Length: 137
Image 1 (cartoon, helix red, strand yellow):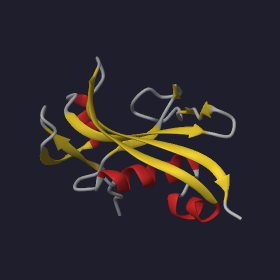
Image 2 (cartoon, rainbow, N blue to C red):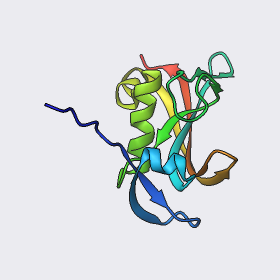
Image 3 (cartoon, rainbow, N blue to C red):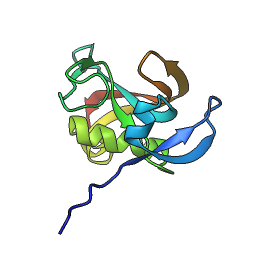
Protein backbone atom coordinates (compact mmCIF):
# COMPACT_ATOMS: atom_id res chain seq x y z
CA UNK A 1 0.00 0.00 0.00
CA UNK A 2 1.38 3.39 -1.00
CA UNK A 3 1.77 5.99 1.77
CA UNK A 4 0.47 9.47 1.07
CA UNK A 5 2.29 12.38 2.64
CA UNK A 6 0.25 14.81 4.69
CA UNK A 7 0.31 18.13 2.86
CA UNK A 8 0.39 21.08 5.24
CA UNK A 9 -1.81 23.92 4.05
CA UNK A 10 -1.00 27.43 5.17
CA UNK A 11 -3.08 30.59 5.18
CA UNK A 12 -2.67 32.50 1.93
CA UNK A 13 -3.30 36.26 2.11
CA UNK A 14 -3.09 39.18 -0.26
CA UNK A 15 -0.85 42.25 0.03
CA UNK A 16 -3.47 43.79 2.35
CA UNK A 17 -3.50 40.72 4.67
CA UNK A 18 -6.95 39.53 3.58
CA UNK A 19 -7.48 35.77 3.89
CA UNK A 20 -7.55 34.08 0.47
CA UNK A 21 -7.81 30.50 1.75
CA UNK A 22 -5.19 27.79 1.86
CA UNK A 23 -2.24 26.72 -0.22
CA UNK A 24 0.27 23.91 0.32
CA UNK A 25 3.37 25.14 2.18
CA UNK A 26 5.74 24.01 -0.60
CA UNK A 27 3.78 26.05 -3.19
CA UNK A 28 3.78 29.11 -0.91
CA UNK A 29 7.59 28.86 -0.59
CA UNK A 30 8.26 28.05 -4.27
CA UNK A 31 6.09 30.92 -5.56
CA UNK A 32 6.97 33.31 -2.72
CA UNK A 33 3.30 33.94 -1.92
CA UNK A 34 1.98 36.24 0.79
CA UNK A 35 1.07 34.28 3.93
CA UNK A 36 0.71 34.75 7.69
CA UNK A 37 3.13 33.67 10.40
CA UNK A 38 3.47 34.27 14.12
CA UNK A 39 6.57 35.64 15.83
CA UNK A 40 6.92 35.58 19.61
CA UNK A 41 9.78 37.54 21.15
CA UNK A 42 10.60 36.15 24.61
CA UNK A 43 12.18 38.46 27.18
CA UNK A 44 13.58 37.06 30.42
CA UNK A 45 12.97 39.89 32.90
CA UNK A 46 15.04 38.25 35.65
CA UNK A 47 18.27 38.14 33.62
CA UNK A 48 17.34 41.06 31.34
CA UNK A 49 17.86 39.24 28.04
CA UNK A 50 16.00 37.98 25.01
CA UNK A 51 15.86 34.24 24.44
CA UNK A 52 17.26 33.13 21.09
CA UNK A 53 16.71 29.79 19.41
CA UNK A 54 18.72 27.92 16.83
CA UNK A 55 16.52 26.72 13.96
CA UNK A 56 16.77 23.07 12.97
CA UNK A 57 18.56 22.17 9.77
CA UNK A 58 15.31 20.77 8.33
CA UNK A 59 13.44 24.11 8.25
CA UNK A 60 12.38 25.34 4.79
CA UNK A 61 13.23 28.96 5.67
CA UNK A 62 16.67 29.85 7.07
CA UNK A 63 17.66 26.36 8.28
CA UNK A 64 20.28 26.32 11.04
CA UNK A 65 20.08 30.08 11.61
CA UNK A 66 19.69 31.75 15.00
CA UNK A 67 16.31 33.40 15.46
CA UNK A 68 15.31 36.14 17.87
CA UNK A 69 11.73 34.90 17.87
CA UNK A 70 9.83 31.67 18.03
CA UNK A 71 6.83 31.08 15.81
CA UNK A 72 5.68 29.66 12.55
CA UNK A 73 3.41 29.72 9.56
CA UNK A 74 -0.31 30.03 10.31
CA UNK A 75 -2.49 27.15 9.15
CA UNK A 76 -5.66 27.63 7.11
CA UNK A 77 -8.26 29.42 9.27
CA UNK A 78 -6.07 29.04 12.39
CA UNK A 79 -6.54 31.93 14.84
CA UNK A 80 -3.32 33.90 15.05
CA UNK A 81 -2.95 33.85 18.84
CA UNK A 82 -3.59 30.10 18.99
CA UNK A 83 -0.89 29.66 16.35
CA UNK A 84 1.55 31.74 18.39
CA UNK A 85 0.75 29.83 21.59
CA UNK A 86 1.10 26.46 19.81
CA UNK A 87 4.45 27.43 18.29
CA UNK A 88 5.71 28.74 21.65
CA UNK A 89 4.88 25.37 23.23
CA UNK A 90 6.32 23.29 20.34
CA UNK A 91 9.55 25.22 19.91
CA UNK A 92 10.40 26.44 23.41
CA UNK A 93 8.34 24.22 25.72
CA UNK A 94 6.54 27.25 27.18
CA UNK A 95 2.84 26.81 27.87
CA UNK A 96 0.99 30.03 28.67
CA UNK A 97 -1.65 28.23 30.73
CA UNK A 98 0.75 26.28 32.94
CA UNK A 99 3.27 29.13 33.19
CA UNK A 100 0.58 31.45 34.53
CA UNK A 101 -0.08 29.04 37.39
CA UNK A 102 3.38 29.58 38.84
CA UNK A 103 4.59 32.95 37.60
CA UNK A 104 3.26 36.35 36.77
CA UNK A 105 3.99 36.78 33.08
CA UNK A 106 3.11 39.33 30.46
CA UNK A 107 1.75 38.59 26.97
CA UNK A 108 1.48 41.58 24.62
CA UNK A 109 -0.13 41.47 21.19
CA UNK A 110 1.97 43.81 19.02
CA UNK A 111 -0.27 43.47 15.94
CA UNK A 112 0.57 42.68 12.32
CA UNK A 113 3.64 43.82 10.42
CA UNK A 114 4.45 43.06 6.79
CA UNK A 115 7.89 41.81 5.79
CA UNK A 116 9.46 40.87 2.48
CA UNK A 117 12.90 39.74 1.40
CA UNK A 118 14.29 37.65 -1.48
CA UNK A 119 12.84 34.47 0.10
CA UNK A 120 9.48 35.41 1.60
CA UNK A 121 6.45 37.70 1.76
CA UNK A 122 4.75 37.51 5.14
CA UNK A 123 2.25 39.28 7.34
CA UNK A 124 3.83 38.77 10.73
CA UNK A 125 1.59 38.50 13.77
CA UNK A 126 3.95 39.62 16.54
CA UNK A 127 3.85 39.12 20.30
CA UNK A 128 6.07 39.96 23.25
CA UNK A 129 6.19 37.39 26.04
CA UNK A 130 7.88 38.55 29.25
CA UNK A 131 8.74 35.99 31.89
CA UNK A 132 8.75 35.86 34.88
CA UNK A 133 7.93 39.01 36.76
CA UNK A 134 7.95 37.12 40.05
CA UNK A 135 7.03 33.80 41.55
CA UNK A 136 3.49 33.66 42.93
CA UNK A 137 3.60 32.39 46.54
